[in-house]
Length: 318
Image (tube, rainbow, N blue to C red; front, top):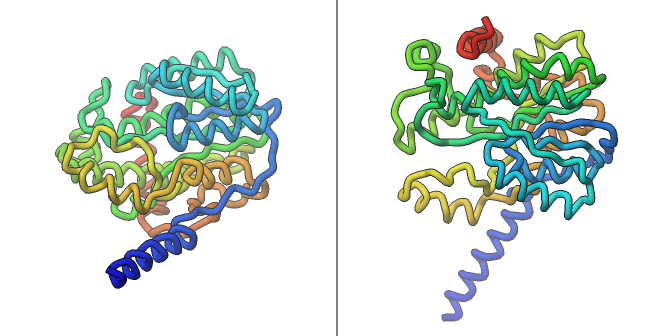
């Protein structure tokens, strides 16, 4: 019995050490205040998005929660206002799985808001099926919806002084690839809707996020808008809430033990949105609140341009 207790104590100590040394992510150190600034956060009713919105509201910004679910967004607003005292937190409906919804959001925003200082493309999912436009759901929401949203708001960003576009990607991009023939033939990043297929498509979409940021930075040269992509860390979020039972059985204990909370997950987003002096790093990829090198496929100029052109076609912009 004593031996078992010693082993158990050793396991607990090792886990705590792992959590402190590896799993605990650094915090955003910026003291920037946002009074008079306007920020959009997509998918801000839960998880990293909500935590990000709360921090930005605490800094005095006018924060737009761009979400599909009105009820959950309004609940998030009540929480944020209660905690920060900032009543400049508002909901605007946005369904990234509908290009018409993205266009309507942009139109309503441009009519009602005179400026835009920070656009945070945070929302993401790992669901099967197709969008209302017949595009693969993961491809449509994680990449195309944000691509279209960014382009529609780009002029307002340029008009607002120094502004930023921050796109939440993932280290999962390392397992991703872009099959342009599949995009052309099926409007999707891959075939199949098994849990493994969905995970692969998610990784492909995160590579899209990084390539989009890479190309966006090229096209923004000479402007006062900069852009960044990032890996938030291994975070406990609701992204897999629609996964099948066996996948949840595998992932739930792993998530509980080795993933960190949304507060930690929001720190690199906040760093990219707020930290002064990042302008020369526009187009780069961040993790743990610092710039990181990416694999060659994530900074391939030709692939980035080709993805941009394919995205324009699918969004009806070319």
